[in-house]
Image (cartoon, rainbow, N blue to C red; front, side, top):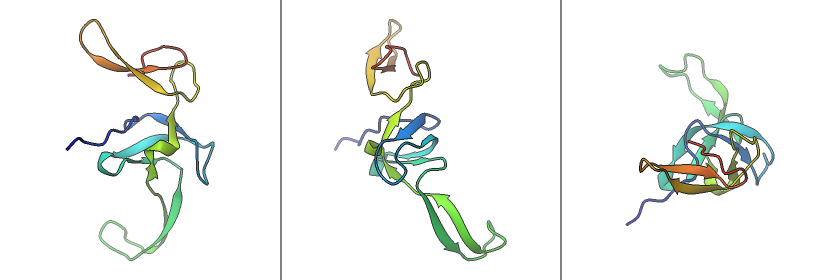
Amino acid sequence: MTRPKVHVRKGDTVVVIAGKDKGKKGKVLRVIPSEQRVIVEGVNKVKRHMRPNPQLQQGGIIEKEAPLHSSNVMLVCTKCDRPTRIGRRILADGRKVRVCKKCGEVID
């Protein structure tokens, strides 16, 4: 069985292209490849009622980011600063890298 692929990595800057937070930019905090989901900083906030525990001294209503499906985010190129699709290229030294489809620059 093949592992599901996710086109973004932890630390990438992405823009949300669908859903209630459409148009928001943020940094990828976590990638969950088994579910094809990503958690983006400041996007898809949900409120959770938490009980006091060792990590959280005081309980209450905590606001945190929930996972988004990876198809609803688009990578923002670091060079041209635009949302873009990515391609793959094998460099002369044998490394496989991600490439911006708009400007052709290496993203990794």
